[in-house]
Image 1: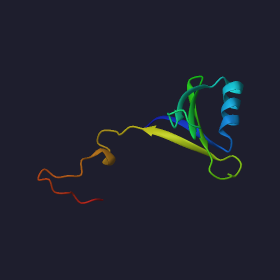
Image 2 (image 1 turned 180 degrees about the vertical axis):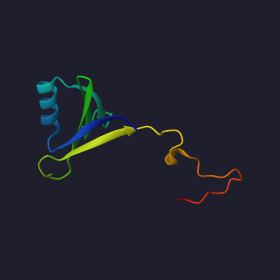
Image 3 (image 1 turned 90 degrees about the vertical axis):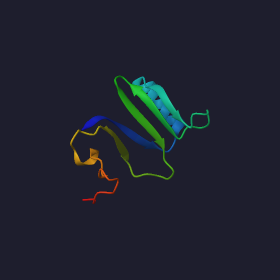
Image 4 (image 1 turned 90 degrees about the horizontal axis):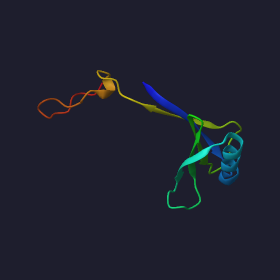
Length: 95
């Protein structure tokens, strides 16, 4: 199940993009990497009740390049949440 999702825009100029989204949409900086105060390569902004990520692009990107990040939770009984070991400590066959 998807618990939440947010877009991450790859930008060539972090300073300009951060200023734009902060000023145009009232974005509030909630996270910056690296956290030590150096030039950020990734930031997260709270925009209303949503989040927007900005990542510094390492190379020119095609127009409209966007990443979509999903947070998911495992459902009980779903194959991805089952323990793959047997009671004797042997590995169960992988399907």
